[in-house]
Length: 262
Ligand code: F6R
Image (cartoon, rainbow, N blue to C red):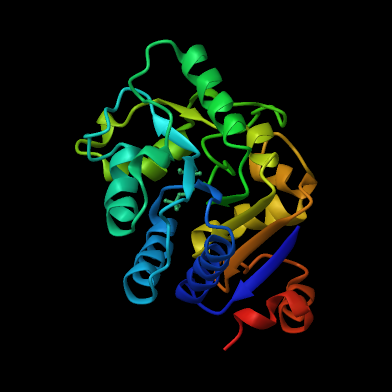
């Protein structure tokens, strides 16, 4: 795992978007894992701009989202399918048939989960997985005590996640209590992972996930087991990290980051 600290939330989102851009540009038929949530909106704005202004080509890109609320149809404004269409897919030249999310209306949860896993496998696995982190430490909707080897399945959401996400629902109580989510094992199979976290509200959980012990109490800590994970944070989210100086040194000195400067 490596940690990159950028001065502002916008700069952190910009670096994330640049990594995705370079990967899409060098590998047109990329399999891209996507996340939703407030943090990602800026990243998707930047990718949409790259497409509009610099013709970044998504025509062969295939995508798999991490999760979807159970009980919400695609046309529901709070479904993650709706979010993805609105924030990214409708703004770039992606073929919608190549974009995948679990079907929130599926009645057989096990069959839907197995189907999703199989589809990822049939596409050759995920090349680059984008992640946010919830205040519960979840990645996708892998709430505390999710098995570190878990696969796609339906999951009950914690009160912390309910508090975090119900602000988007009118009334807040209409937020579903369950969701389909890729498992931690599914996420760890991705060849590269980029997690973006911004704002002071994420500082405590980021320090636990990055510098604390690997524990199923904090799903994101499992990323410490992955060979190529980059955690990108802004100054506010890095507040509680102990090894900040080392992380800054890495960005300043590692040749890999040269092309992302200036
Ligand atoms: C959503 C997802 C979640 C979010 C996390 C952070 O697809 O996978 O893990 O990334 O809840 O959400 P925000 O960015 O709204 O703080």
